[in-house]
Length: 243
Ligand SMILES: [Zn+2]
Image (tube, rainbow, N blue to C red; front, side, top):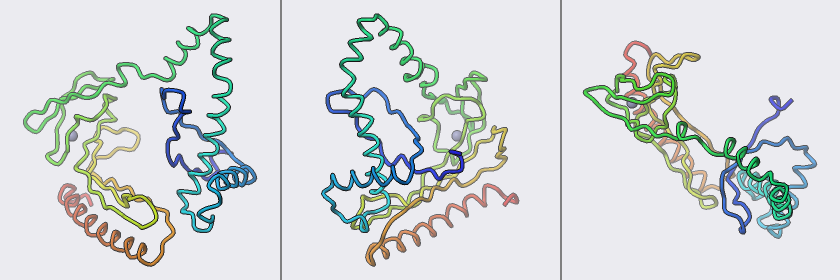
């Protein structure tokens, strides 16, 4: 059933209660009914004293209210129980067992946290992989490098070009990025092979616009089109006959 439902969020990460120190972020997906959405939004909106009116709220803010209510319900219920439960498991002597399970599930091992320390040669780069050890591969001149990459398997290696971004600013919401694009090539992918570089593009915006903000959007889209065309010219040169 879940796979048939539309999925939304997370819109943002909600802080843990102010008396606790954050340890990890747990991402959660919850099926909700329309009545539960009504309830979460009505409570969240009441806590805002009903302003702005729901009709004027951006989609992102509506989702933030709903997710915020769900997150608060979980945080408050944990907060109420924390002291008693921690004391009880401590007295029962099972705290070390619980901590060991948490360490297995909620901390990364040194291996999967390792960052690449790439070594660059003449048109090559030497990288560490978890399945093939150290390997030396061709490094395309447009690749921005691998120093921020995490160590992974050979087929996860991806060459990524410099990021092209197009900003979008409105009077109502925080500045955002309407398009992000970069050349990308993962030459060792096996399931969905990528024999030639592609242009990776992210486009995402949901908003309610008045006229000035609508003009800001059309300006941003024109700028996005210009930058997209320029990036595609570069991609066409790299792909040659393989359009
Ligand atoms: Zn590269």
